[in-house]
Length: 121
Image (cartoon, rainbow, N blue to C red; front, side, top):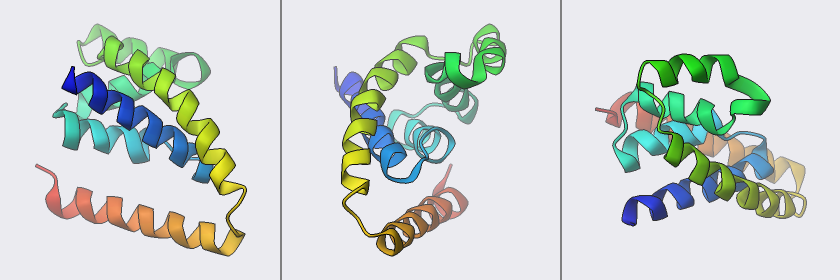
């Protein structure tokens, strides 16, 4: 149950950030699945592609699925939560000044980069 809650939080957060900044999969979902769910990098990437299966990565996701590196259940849970988060994030972003939004986005990218470079296992 706790794992499902974490997956929902990841989906909502990725959806909000997608609505705010136009990002989600590689920048948010993959690191979150690695750090908070404990997935391998391959499984996190496969799961991220799986949740975006139809619009973007169906062929790549099929390869990850065939190799056992796609968690279908996690991908579906995150996808549903992502829809809600995307709506909320876009509403928030529309109320933020452009320059401020750019600065917030830059800080987010910096934090994720530092975390991946210095604190990944």
